[in-house]
Image 1 (tube, rainbow, N blue to C red):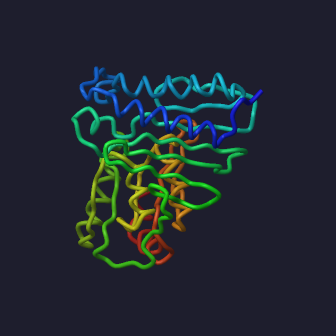
Image 2 (cartoon, helix red, strand yellow):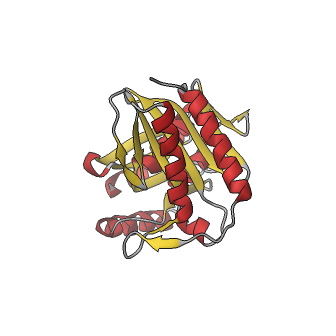
Image 3 (spheres, helix red, strand yellow):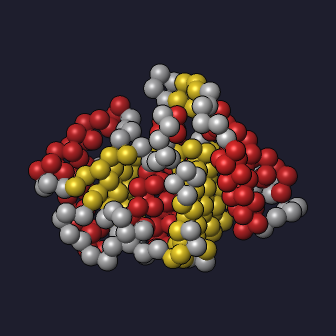
Length: 256
């Protein structure tokens, strides 16, 4: 039996997060998941906090999180959580990281939450509208070659050659290419008119589904260019508008 609606649970999670970050000490314990990927006690705490909320209030839902084994329920509702998108930034005392949460029902987006706690930004979607701190946001409405485009600095070893081709294309066309460690925040930047597009060779669903919902709700375009369902990841082009999208596809379609 559900004790909370989806909106109520998101609101409670948001309040818990803001309170947690307000009181936290930014000197977390850091461990290595593998030879190059780190996880902090904060990743695990946020993951545990959310899963506890689900178990108590919506035990039949499914949770797919970066930091824990999937919790499989028998309802049609699925939650996608990245407790800290860009853990490296958080661990190095930078502020360009986010908590990313998306919920789907029957594979259709329902609502999303993206919080940059130390930049005081809260992105949300409600009824197909995208908001930043309660104000509706919209992306660029046209394309200019000097508008910034982003990609994620983290790629798997298998995709290094593709990444090199992408960089070569960007350099040859003098694109204002920016590289970051957070696909979620890059998508949010497109949604709020701070960047024209984001091109990703591969990102996990928990990294991007909140950003996807945010950008689509703002009026942007996302096209999946490659997908690996077993790994729960995909490559994609995300654009502010159709003109930008055609420009990005013309440049990068052969990279995928």
